[in-house]
Length: 215
Image (cartoon, rainbow, N blue to C red; front, side, top):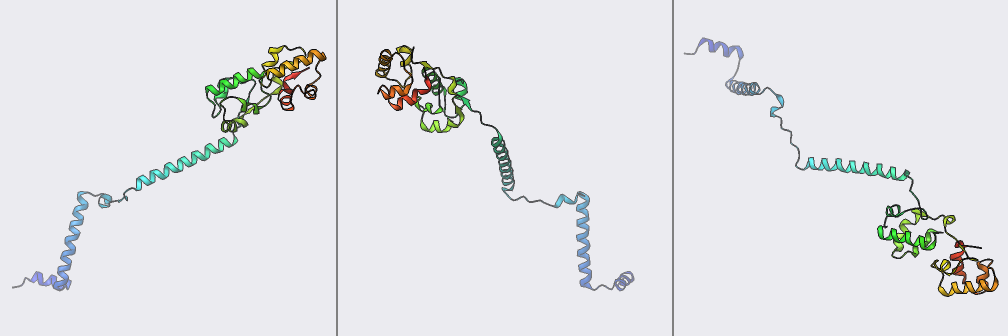
């Protein structure tokens, strides 16, 4: 015997058997979801954010590259406007020379020693004559050095003795002896051209020592 109450509900809702089954399943699902949300009410609790493997490393690498690129660009800009210090060869010390690329304490000391021997540099080109200083190194530092020829120690050719003249490395012993003999004979030397004309010196030597002579 069917319950009048059940028959009344069935007639009121008008559900078929299949509809009642679907409705029951839907109610069960709703109850389960509601129960889970009650246990952990955070909506993000069941949302998993998946980060592809290696993405964080790639991201860090990209940030580092951008940072380095920005730093390099900034450094290049600063270098572009920073004036290059030019060293004066006749007043500098070894420490200043060692700051130049390619020059260590040995070469710096040789440059200072050769300066004393010459009495000073009249041109930066004379650095080519320093023992052990390569053409590659000279090419690197040539734009960073200069020589003030007014600072050189001159030789008074009409009063100088043998040791005063021979200290200049461009003269040979024979040339110094010939200069002194010519001076004794003529009494006075008016200029290097006179020595060249009389075959005492070659034109090449005369040009090298011209700024070191006074009359």
